[in-house]
Image (cartoon, rainbow, N blue to C red; front, top):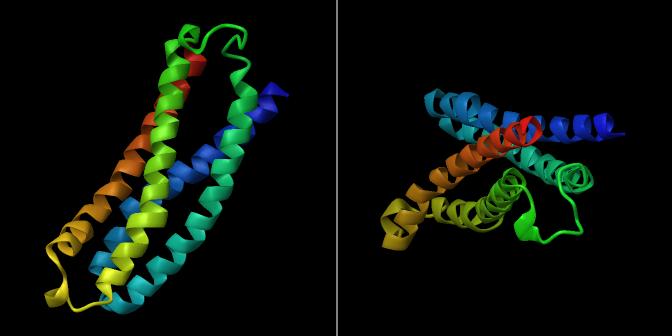
Length: 158
């Protein structure tokens, strides 16, 4: 059972982190170099929306399988502060990753889409900052995803 749960957990993590790497290093550069930016943007938005929907399924799978796998690394009868530091670090990174993903997908992304529908001359200073800041939230999500994978490797190797 442990091997099956681990495989499901890793598959969901591969999907999520691999998808972020694909979007960042393949899709976005193609979007920026497209001869038809409007068509490329429509394609990118379609791909990213589909990916986002599936990512939330993957997150659900990761939370469930992660909770089940946690019993192999901690003794639930002891205080949380007595858990192995590798577990606490991974859980903290997972929490940050989920918060960052929610912020990116549900708050900043929709606001930026609305702002970008306006003429840039009508953007407020706050709008300008948000449009410039939004890609960095996506990058931070990817970096946190890679950090969670690294923490997972450290967890199973400790």
